[in-house]
Image (cartoon, one colour):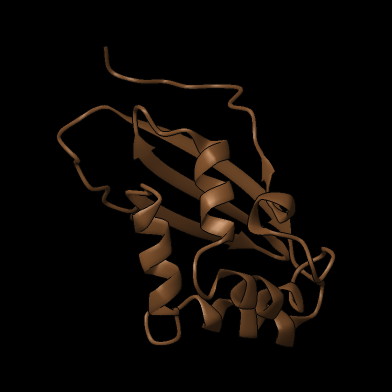
Length: 127
């Protein structure tokens, strides 16, 4: 999409985290992974859990078998404690086991073990 994506203005300072993960290099598995995340198939309890731990907005982008996740949170968000809490919420372990079949990871990995945090190496912004 070359038209870009509008972003929500939360009216306050936010933090952004960017992570990446590789999917299994199989077009059918990739199709099913994308389907599991669409508006029809996304699990409500997983979305509720992300909001419960303080995630304001999350986006996934894919090219080939590489997925990038962008997570916006409040400025005072603590990633490690939030991910620990998220792992114990209802449905989360089942969800991670389900999507593991599409991902290059161990079937028992938590979300925080699967995704690799990316370092920002460049930024341009209007001061």
